[in-house]
Length: 477
Ligand SMILES: *[C@@H]1O[C@H](CO)[C@@H](O)[C@H](O)[C@H]1NC(C)=O
Figure (cartoon, rainbow, N blue to C red):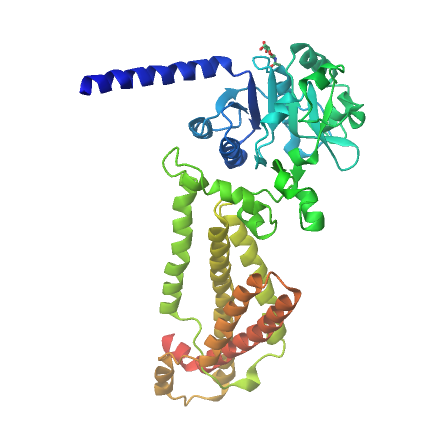
């Protein structure tokens, strides 16, 4: 019995091995993408997952350039990509966007002659429905975008060394309106806007009856960009039929956590991302192991700091000494408050890793903005407090020699000012509520008014407390 089972399993293994072998030899068609640097790594992972989710077993080839780390190569290979290292094709345009330094490399897909047909997809695209029919496209297919220009984010190419060589002879002379590969392809295929639309349902007889077209246009379903979505806040094509979503908007790439809050179709991308398998330790759900440690550290640090601050308790106030408060203190505090708020937001945005989960990103930025603001504005209040002390001592050094030393000792005991905490918590509450109210103008206005009012109040009470504390300073010195 067990012998039978082992024979059976050997048979099964060899059949599987044979299938794999055939697969490796037989794949004449492939999906291709390009990876220029690690920034797009997560994009490539999600794209690969989305292709496999549609049930495709075709080769997936990632053309990887010099700027990509070994770790990234290992990871996408584990995800099922065939990694091919290529050298960059230098961009011949001297006037071009900086991020376009290597985009002419994309032309190398025309040279992938080991395949009969390749479907090229940018790393910022995902496949949401089976697109195997697009391999029927014959020589060169692309989608026509806004105005009469082809978009190079999704291409179907029949690789040909002659075509590629011809392109290479023209790379240095042909005009590129974008300063990149897309502009070049538009010049190279000037008749593209007149190409007929690719029909995936055309019968073989129909195809035979007419000459092979040099180029065909893909319908928008194969390259639906989020720009199109943003215009009407819905897909302007049949959503059920959508095949490829292209996250075109420059600074709003789906892997940056904040785009989840700004661009609705990012949901689709994130849903694929959270299902990414753990191919290497700590990479499940599209996490980066380095980020994970950093995120834990970033979450904890402010708490440690706040505990320390509580111990030092900056924000405890007494009252009185109203008359000595300088008239410009209020206005100064409002300015400091807003500068501190802006600095906190900028600093926290720049210190939080970009490609973490949307909620983690949001909470971390909130936590850090809050903490940095507390440090900055708290230090300012501390300064004001000392200033109050200084003014008080100036005033008394001439007049009173008969100060009561016991008084200072009494006031050393922190008298927690309820209103200071009330204002501080109010600031925190509004700062939290405003983003949740989807950045409404009214919310912003309320926050601004409250912060103005509260910062004024806080600084004046800090000054007054300093003024009251004059004796404590004298005893200390
Ligand atoms: C194009 O492909 C051929 C054959 O695979 C290869 O020898 C050649 O180096 C390739 N050219 C470039 C510029 O990559």
